[in-house]
Image (cartoon, rainbow, N blue to C red; front, side, top):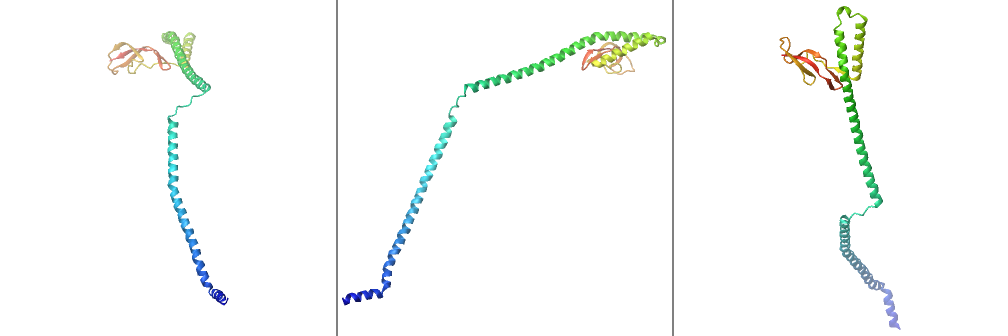
Length: 222
């Protein structure tokens, strides 16, 4: 009994021994935790290549799907949509043809009107020529008579009406001969005039707008 009591006293007097004995066990637990953390980190690092391979596989499959979709045949349209497109195209073509027809007919109408007007004016010009010849044939002493004054008024009215319609006389005398406007019927030698100059106008020429109704009948010098 005395020996047991001595042992207990000895143990109570040395508490450091128990702490030393327990300390290594805590250290071992901490070392075990650190090793487990390292192992987990290794497992995480080992898991990354797998993820990369999976993403590559997904990218390859998506690219292959895109290629398949590119080479895939187009889906057929609804028959109703095809009919609508066909009718719309026909309507556009018809409208374009009608517009061209309208422009062409307007141009033909204007040209026909111009041709008809030129024919009428050309038949009226001899009347004007006779009026001018009659006024020129009146003697000086009779120019103040009512008949002469009446003829002059009629001639002026006739010329004014033609001008309103777009008829203008062609200038000839003293101008250089131009075959587009002048018709040479005589030729003379005159030192006072230059070469190829109109010396005399035998019959007046007229234009209707931009076209010649009748060429001037002229005499050309040199």
